[in-house]
Image 1 (cartoon, helix red, strand yellow):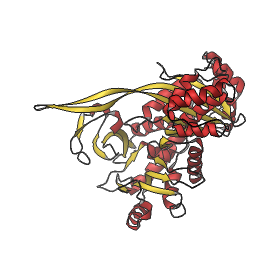
Image 2 (image 1 turned 90 degrees about the horizontal axis):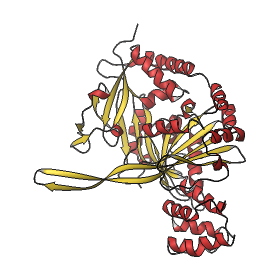
Image 3 (image 1 turned 90 degrees about the vertical axis):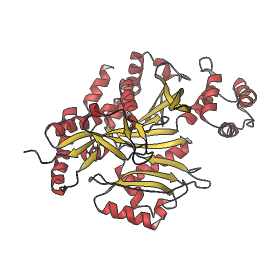
Image 4 (image 1 turned 30 degrees about the vertical axis):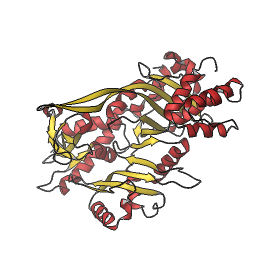
Length: 131
Length: 335
């Protein structure tokens, strides 16, 4: 990479600031979400939904903000295995918990392999707002 | 240019990317003999003689390859950056320095023509629109596995997959106004591009730092496509619409044939509208921009709005004019 390119990149807002912007937008949204949640229904968000709420931030800044929101107890991260058409089948706590196959009870009615193409990282609102 | 470009390979790539009719129209538009019943005949009787006697230049022929392989059958990701930063990145002296550091200076005068390179390779770096746009093209070979058949031996069922190699053309267009459009060749059997995008971002970093750019959400376009469906009825047919809410519930309305129009059905409209009124949002849609006789699009163009929030797909090959029409319509709906 040339030196001149580095100087151009420097004129884009610094990553930590963008992470803070994303974090604040998302935290504001999540605060409101605690009022909406019901006892029986979890509030669940896809990465693209949170990306829209976070506003104009680079992908890396969003990823860092989401890590912070998980660490500070606003969100729980989990992984969802989906059918080929993108409908959820089963949720797992982490990538390490994924089995090699799951039963597709919605579309094909047989065991389907768990591959990166049918796994989506999702988030759910924690049970209580952090203090 | 003639000395360096592998013209038969350009012809082969053109033949893989488009139809004889498109090449015939291209020759016809230049008042050149244009009829041919096969690709061999097209090359031997039409292209080669025209190149030899100078009625067609190699540059024009390479431009044809650019036109036919750079549009359609792609997942498109939209980004933005500060116009001043974009202008600096597009600047010729900057690009020359970067290409020199990568030992790719020759791209400024000639594209490289690859069929299936061993490693991802930049094939073209050029300016267009009077220097307001920088186009970057990369070619790579992608391997995937395709289901080949199933055999049963007693209680054992064996499924066979064969390795398929395909040529991938990825194109990026950086504009001085601060927009960046990345068109990634569609994958076989997968609609997920996260990993491909991550790898491409690393490969392209010396030229454009996609990681520092801001994805342009298409949420407004997805919403407008549905809420303005009556005004758009002559332009767009809706194969399916998926709406979702944060209670983890989705509602999908879909037609059972690609000619069915979800937005033309009162029951489907009512269901989707009711869902949207209760904190729902449009998550994805499958639409068709319908053909306009003598205008654009020149045929029905299928567009899929799903995946990342800044992503849409044009699953089949299309002309540059049709692609630009679709992009302009979506951006218009996204404002």
